[in-house]
Image (cartoon, rainbow, N blue to C red; front, side, top):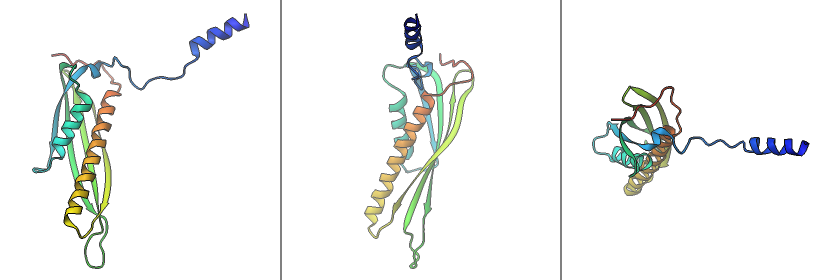
Length: 164
């Protein structure tokens, strides 16, 4: 009798694992329309962010919807230190992302987060340019993945209405 009771408890309570999100999450089945805003006119940060976010959120097999994600991308450059000859020794890059997710009925989710990186300056101008581009690309990739996972794993206070 004790063995049967033990086996019943073992089978029904054996796994404590709970996934972060369900595979049949409603929002992961629909295409999200992306709107990326950035103050930079000639930078490729917004277009790279849009491309990476689109790859993380919108797959080919998704259904069209009225879900809309509005993202504001802001880039700040800060000099880290000044040497005796009045040159800087490093640059800190900081990206701030503000986002809002809307469906047919209104606002579902909003928030903001930021990430920061730094690189050293050298006397080689080309090396500084490459360091800046590399740091920017890595930060943008990380930010797009963070935003995509935040949206996919979110639990909403009300029912999502993504249909046209």
